[in-house]
Length: 292
Image (cartoon, rainbow, N blue to C red; front, side, top):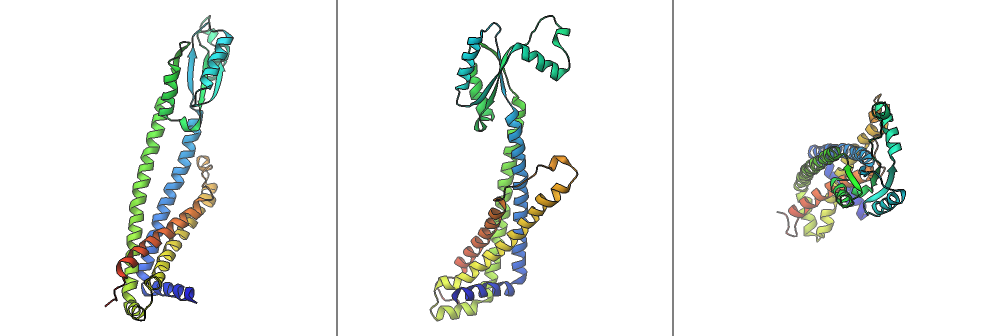
Protein backbone atom coordinates (compact mmCIF):
# COMPACT_ATOMS: atom_id res chain seq x y z
CA UNK A 1 0.00 0.00 0.00
CA UNK A 2 2.78 2.40 0.96
CA UNK A 3 4.75 1.69 -2.21
CA UNK A 4 1.61 2.19 -4.33
CA UNK A 5 1.09 5.60 -2.73
CA UNK A 6 4.73 6.64 -3.26
CA UNK A 7 4.71 5.44 -6.87
CA UNK A 8 1.35 7.13 -7.50
CA UNK A 9 2.67 10.42 -6.11
CA UNK A 10 5.74 10.10 -8.37
CA UNK A 11 3.48 9.72 -11.41
CA UNK A 12 1.40 12.65 -10.15
CA UNK A 13 4.61 14.67 -10.10
CA UNK A 14 4.99 14.04 -13.83
CA UNK A 15 1.51 15.40 -14.46
CA UNK A 16 2.02 18.52 -12.37
CA UNK A 17 5.27 19.44 -14.16
CA UNK A 18 4.83 17.98 -17.64
CA UNK A 19 7.01 20.45 -19.51
CA UNK A 20 9.94 20.37 -17.10
CA UNK A 21 9.68 16.55 -16.79
CA UNK A 22 9.76 16.22 -20.57
CA UNK A 23 12.75 18.59 -20.71
CA UNK A 24 14.61 16.49 -18.12
CA UNK A 25 13.84 13.24 -19.92
CA UNK A 26 14.85 14.76 -23.26
CA UNK A 27 18.16 16.11 -21.93
CA UNK A 28 18.98 12.78 -20.24
CA UNK A 29 18.12 11.05 -23.53
CA UNK A 30 20.38 13.41 -25.54
CA UNK A 31 23.15 13.18 -22.91
CA UNK A 32 23.18 9.39 -22.80
CA UNK A 33 22.78 9.14 -26.58
CA UNK A 34 25.85 11.35 -27.03
CA UNK A 35 27.78 9.46 -24.33
CA UNK A 36 26.66 6.13 -25.78
CA UNK A 37 27.77 7.10 -29.29
CA UNK A 38 31.08 8.35 -27.89
CA UNK A 39 31.45 5.05 -26.03
CA UNK A 40 30.57 3.10 -29.19
CA UNK A 41 33.20 4.97 -31.19
CA UNK A 42 35.75 4.68 -28.39
CA UNK A 43 35.14 0.96 -27.88
CA UNK A 44 35.51 0.16 -31.57
CA UNK A 45 38.45 2.51 -32.10
CA UNK A 46 40.15 0.84 -29.15
CA UNK A 47 39.47 -2.59 -30.72
CA UNK A 48 41.05 -1.34 -33.95
CA UNK A 49 44.05 0.12 -32.12
CA UNK A 50 44.57 -3.11 -30.18
CA UNK A 51 44.45 -5.15 -33.40
CA UNK A 52 47.04 -2.80 -34.97
CA UNK A 53 49.21 -2.90 -31.85
CA UNK A 54 49.08 -6.70 -31.92
CA UNK A 55 50.81 -6.56 -35.31
CA UNK A 56 53.48 -4.11 -34.14
CA UNK A 57 56.65 -6.02 -33.33
CA UNK A 58 60.10 -5.11 -32.15
CA UNK A 59 62.68 -6.47 -34.57
CA UNK A 60 66.20 -7.11 -33.29
CA UNK A 61 68.80 -7.63 -36.06
CA UNK A 62 71.70 -9.95 -35.21
CA UNK A 63 75.35 -9.72 -36.04
CA UNK A 64 76.59 -12.13 -38.68
CA UNK A 65 78.45 -15.29 -37.75
CA UNK A 66 76.40 -16.42 -34.74
CA UNK A 67 76.17 -20.16 -34.21
CA UNK A 68 72.89 -22.02 -33.73
CA UNK A 69 73.61 -22.49 -30.02
CA UNK A 70 74.24 -18.75 -29.62
CA UNK A 71 70.98 -17.96 -31.40
CA UNK A 72 69.07 -20.41 -29.17
CA UNK A 73 70.66 -18.89 -26.07
CA UNK A 74 69.74 -15.38 -27.18
CA UNK A 75 66.16 -16.46 -27.87
CA UNK A 76 65.85 -17.88 -24.35
CA UNK A 77 67.20 -14.65 -22.85
CA UNK A 78 64.78 -12.43 -24.78
CA UNK A 79 61.87 -14.78 -24.06
CA UNK A 80 62.57 -14.40 -20.35
CA UNK A 81 61.81 -10.65 -20.45
CA UNK A 82 58.57 -10.00 -18.54
CA UNK A 83 57.25 -7.83 -21.40
CA UNK A 84 57.72 -10.48 -24.09
CA UNK A 85 54.96 -12.81 -25.20
CA UNK A 86 56.68 -14.56 -28.11
CA UNK A 87 59.98 -14.53 -30.02
CA UNK A 88 60.30 -15.67 -33.62
CA UNK A 89 63.70 -16.22 -35.25
CA UNK A 90 64.10 -15.10 -38.88
CA UNK A 91 67.19 -16.58 -40.54
CA UNK A 92 69.08 -14.85 -43.34
CA UNK A 93 67.47 -17.24 -45.85
CA UNK A 94 63.95 -16.44 -44.53
CA UNK A 95 64.77 -12.73 -44.71
CA UNK A 96 65.45 -13.14 -48.46
CA UNK A 97 62.03 -14.75 -48.96
CA UNK A 98 60.32 -11.98 -46.98
CA UNK A 99 62.13 -9.35 -49.07
CA UNK A 100 61.02 -11.04 -52.29
CA UNK A 101 57.42 -11.34 -51.06
CA UNK A 102 57.20 -7.69 -50.02
CA UNK A 103 59.13 -6.07 -52.87
CA UNK A 104 58.60 -8.60 -55.67
CA UNK A 105 62.33 -8.73 -56.37
CA UNK A 106 64.90 -11.44 -55.74
CA UNK A 107 67.78 -9.79 -53.96
CA UNK A 108 70.30 -12.04 -55.76
CA UNK A 109 69.25 -10.41 -59.04
CA UNK A 110 70.67 -7.19 -57.60
CA UNK A 111 73.59 -8.44 -55.51
CA UNK A 112 75.67 -11.61 -55.60
CA UNK A 113 75.52 -11.99 -51.82
CA UNK A 114 72.90 -11.86 -49.08
CA UNK A 115 73.18 -8.56 -47.15
CA UNK A 116 70.08 -9.20 -45.05
CA UNK A 117 70.77 -10.01 -41.40
CA UNK A 118 69.08 -12.65 -39.29
CA UNK A 119 66.71 -11.21 -36.72
CA UNK A 120 64.28 -11.84 -33.90
CA UNK A 121 60.70 -10.66 -34.28
CA UNK A 122 59.54 -9.91 -30.75
CA UNK A 123 55.84 -9.81 -29.87
CA UNK A 124 54.97 -8.06 -26.61
CA UNK A 125 52.30 -8.92 -24.06
CA UNK A 126 49.12 -6.84 -24.39
CA UNK A 127 49.75 -4.53 -21.44
CA UNK A 128 53.23 -3.65 -22.76
CA UNK A 129 52.10 -2.78 -26.30
CA UNK A 130 52.74 0.92 -25.78
CA UNK A 131 55.67 3.32 -26.09
CA UNK A 132 56.75 2.81 -22.50
CA UNK A 133 56.68 -0.99 -22.77
CA UNK A 134 58.56 -0.95 -26.08
CA UNK A 135 61.24 1.39 -24.68
CA UNK A 136 61.77 -0.93 -21.69
CA UNK A 137 62.32 -3.88 -24.03
CA UNK A 138 64.67 -1.87 -26.28
CA UNK A 139 66.72 -0.78 -23.25
CA UNK A 140 67.23 -4.45 -22.37
CA UNK A 141 67.99 -5.44 -25.96
CA UNK A 142 70.67 -2.74 -26.27
CA UNK A 143 72.64 -4.44 -23.52
CA UNK A 144 73.03 -7.57 -25.66
CA UNK A 145 76.27 -7.39 -27.70
CA UNK A 146 75.09 -9.85 -30.36
CA UNK A 147 72.30 -7.48 -31.42
CA UNK A 148 73.39 -4.99 -34.07
CA UNK A 149 70.25 -2.94 -34.63
CA UNK A 150 66.70 -2.59 -33.30
CA UNK A 151 63.66 -1.41 -35.23
CA UNK A 152 60.01 -0.82 -34.39
CA UNK A 153 57.19 1.35 -35.74
CA UNK A 154 57.64 4.15 -33.23
CA UNK A 155 55.80 6.82 -35.23
CA UNK A 156 52.68 4.69 -35.71
CA UNK A 157 52.59 3.64 -32.06
CA UNK A 158 52.97 7.25 -30.94
CA UNK A 159 50.18 8.49 -33.19
CA UNK A 160 47.81 5.74 -32.03
CA UNK A 161 48.41 6.52 -28.36
CA UNK A 162 48.12 10.31 -28.79
CA UNK A 163 44.87 10.04 -30.78
CA UNK A 164 43.26 7.68 -28.27
CA UNK A 165 44.38 9.81 -25.32
CA UNK A 166 42.84 12.91 -26.95
CA UNK A 167 39.61 11.04 -27.61
CA UNK A 168 39.47 9.77 -24.00
CA UNK A 169 39.92 13.28 -22.59
CA UNK A 170 37.25 14.69 -24.91
CA UNK A 171 34.88 11.90 -23.86
CA UNK A 172 35.45 12.53 -20.14
CA UNK A 173 35.06 16.32 -20.36
CA UNK A 174 31.99 16.26 -22.59
CA UNK A 175 30.48 13.41 -20.58
CA UNK A 176 30.94 15.33 -17.33
CA UNK A 177 29.40 18.53 -18.74
CA UNK A 178 26.41 16.75 -20.30
CA UNK A 179 25.81 14.74 -17.10
CA UNK A 180 25.97 17.94 -15.05
CA UNK A 181 23.36 19.61 -17.29
CA UNK A 182 21.10 16.56 -16.93
CA UNK A 183 21.36 16.56 -13.14
CA UNK A 184 20.67 20.33 -12.97
CA UNK A 185 17.53 19.91 -15.09
CA UNK A 186 16.28 17.07 -12.87
CA UNK A 187 16.94 19.26 -9.81
CA UNK A 188 14.87 22.04 -11.37
CA UNK A 189 12.03 19.65 -12.31
CA UNK A 190 11.83 18.18 -8.80
CA UNK A 191 11.99 21.69 -7.31
CA UNK A 192 8.97 22.73 -9.39
CA UNK A 193 7.09 19.57 -8.34
CA UNK A 194 7.88 20.25 -4.67
CA UNK A 195 6.58 23.79 -5.06
CA UNK A 196 3.39 22.52 -6.74
CA UNK A 197 2.83 20.10 -3.84
CA UNK A 198 3.91 22.42 -1.04
CA UNK A 199 0.47 22.40 0.63
CA UNK A 200 0.34 18.59 0.64
CA UNK A 201 3.89 18.42 2.00
CA UNK A 202 3.00 20.91 4.76
CA UNK A 203 -0.05 18.82 5.72
CA UNK A 204 2.05 15.65 5.84
CA UNK A 205 4.62 17.39 8.05
CA UNK A 206 1.90 18.57 10.42
CA UNK A 207 0.49 15.06 10.84
CA UNK A 208 3.98 13.70 11.60
CA UNK A 209 5.02 12.02 8.33
CA UNK A 210 8.71 11.22 8.29
CA UNK A 211 11.00 13.15 5.98
CA UNK A 212 11.92 9.91 4.21
CA UNK A 213 8.27 9.18 3.43
CA UNK A 214 7.71 12.70 2.05
CA UNK A 215 10.90 12.64 -0.04
CA UNK A 216 10.42 9.13 -1.53
CA UNK A 217 7.98 10.08 -4.35
CA UNK A 218 10.36 12.77 -5.60
CA UNK A 219 13.26 10.34 -5.63
CA UNK A 220 11.14 7.85 -7.61
CA UNK A 221 10.14 10.63 -10.01
CA UNK A 222 13.78 11.50 -10.71
CA UNK A 223 14.64 7.83 -11.07
CA UNK A 224 11.82 7.35 -13.61
CA UNK A 225 12.97 10.37 -15.60
CA UNK A 226 16.46 8.92 -15.80
CA UNK A 227 15.13 5.46 -16.67
CA UNK A 228 12.88 6.69 -19.49
CA UNK A 229 15.60 8.89 -21.01
CA UNK A 230 18.16 6.09 -20.76
CA UNK A 231 15.77 3.50 -22.20
CA UNK A 232 15.18 5.60 -25.31
CA UNK A 233 18.90 6.32 -25.77
CA UNK A 234 19.79 2.62 -25.35
CA UNK A 235 17.11 1.74 -27.89
CA UNK A 236 18.44 4.21 -30.47
CA UNK A 237 22.03 3.00 -30.03
CA UNK A 238 20.88 -0.61 -30.30
CA UNK A 239 19.11 0.18 -33.59
CA UNK A 240 22.24 1.92 -34.91
CA UNK A 241 24.63 -0.90 -33.93
CA UNK A 242 22.46 -3.95 -34.61
CA UNK A 243 20.27 -2.86 -37.54
CA UNK A 244 21.52 0.31 -39.29
CA UNK A 245 25.28 -0.36 -39.46
CA UNK A 246 25.06 -4.04 -40.56
CA UNK A 247 22.91 -2.94 -43.52
CA UNK A 248 25.34 -0.29 -44.72
CA UNK A 249 27.30 -1.14 -47.89
CA UNK A 250 30.63 -0.02 -46.38
CA UNK A 251 32.64 -3.03 -45.15
CA UNK A 252 34.76 -0.78 -42.91
CA UNK A 253 31.87 -0.53 -40.42
CA UNK A 254 30.95 -4.21 -40.57
CA UNK A 255 32.96 -5.00 -37.41
CA UNK A 256 31.32 -2.30 -35.29
CA UNK A 257 29.82 -3.87 -32.15
CA UNK A 258 29.07 -3.22 -28.51
CA UNK A 259 29.25 -5.65 -25.56
CA UNK A 260 25.83 -6.77 -24.26
CA UNK A 261 26.64 -5.32 -20.83
CA UNK A 262 26.79 -1.82 -22.35
CA UNK A 263 22.99 -1.39 -22.55
CA UNK A 264 22.12 -2.21 -18.90
CA UNK A 265 25.06 -0.03 -17.78
CA UNK A 266 23.72 2.87 -19.87
CA UNK A 267 20.23 2.47 -18.38
CA UNK A 268 21.69 2.22 -14.87
CA UNK A 269 23.68 5.43 -15.45
CA UNK A 270 20.51 7.21 -16.60
CA UNK A 271 18.68 6.10 -13.47
CA UNK A 272 21.64 7.26 -11.39
CA UNK A 273 21.59 10.74 -12.99
CA UNK A 274 17.88 11.06 -12.31
CA UNK A 275 18.21 9.81 -8.76
CA UNK A 276 21.14 12.13 -7.94
CA UNK A 277 19.28 15.15 -9.31
CA UNK A 278 16.09 14.35 -7.37
CA UNK A 279 18.03 13.55 -4.18
CA UNK A 280 19.90 16.88 -4.29
CA UNK A 281 16.67 18.78 -4.93
CA UNK A 282 14.65 16.97 -2.26
CA UNK A 283 17.48 17.33 0.27
CA UNK A 284 17.69 21.05 -0.41
CA UNK A 285 14.01 21.97 -0.55
CA UNK A 286 12.43 19.49 1.87
CA UNK A 287 13.79 19.80 5.38
CA UNK A 288 12.49 18.91 8.83
CA UNK A 289 11.27 22.52 9.07
CA UNK A 290 7.58 22.80 8.12
CA UNK A 291 7.12 24.40 4.71
CA UNK A 292 5.40 27.75 4.96
